[in-house]
Image (cartoon, rainbow, N blue to C red; front, top):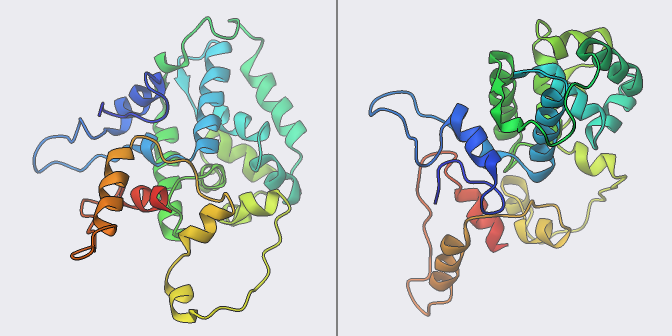
Length: 255
C-alpha cells in the first residue's frame, strides 16, 4: 500500500496529504513524534471539500492552500452551507467577500494541479483540530462539519475572522450535522440491548441506513476478519495497532 493512499488507484491527493501529515510509508524517525495521515481519516464529503478548496486556490493563482479557501469550498457544499445558514450567517455574502479578496480567476480549471500547493500552518492546525473533534465525538472519520468547526476555532486566521464576523461559533456544527442537514429525523426506538446502545454504536444499523462512508484499501483486512469470524472455533478476531491506522475502518467495512 502506498504512503498516503486514499481513494481510487493513482489518486494524487493521497500524496498531497501524505506530504504534510505522513502516512503508513512515512512513520517518521524512531522516537520522534508520530505523524497522522489526515488523508486516510477524511470522509468522502470532507475530502471533496479539501479538493474543491485546493482547486479554488490554484485557479486564483495562490501558491498556498489557506483557511479562506477551505471556507470558500464549505460555502458551496453541503452540509456546511446549511449549517452556516441555520446559524444566521449569509453564505452568499461570505462567498462574495472571499471572492473579492481572491481577485479574478488567473488559471482555467485543470491547468494548474492543486496538489502543487503548500498548506499554510493555519490549515494544518485546522485539519488537526478537526481530527481531534472527530475523535472526541466518536466519529470514525473527519466530516465537513468538523472542518468548519475547526476553522471557527481560530479567530486569528483568515477564515476564522470571517466566521467570527458572521457570529458563527464552533459548537454550531454538531457531530450529527450531516443527517440534520438532510432533514433526517431520528426517533427513539425500543431496544433489547440498552447497555450496548449506551456504550457502543450499532454499525450494522448505520450501514443499513447508509450513514457509514465507503472503506477503501482495506479489502484484505476485511476478508481476513470475515474468515476468522466464519471459523467454528477460535473465531474472535483481534484488531491491534496505533490510533489512526484504520482499525475502526475495518469494522465499518465489515458492517
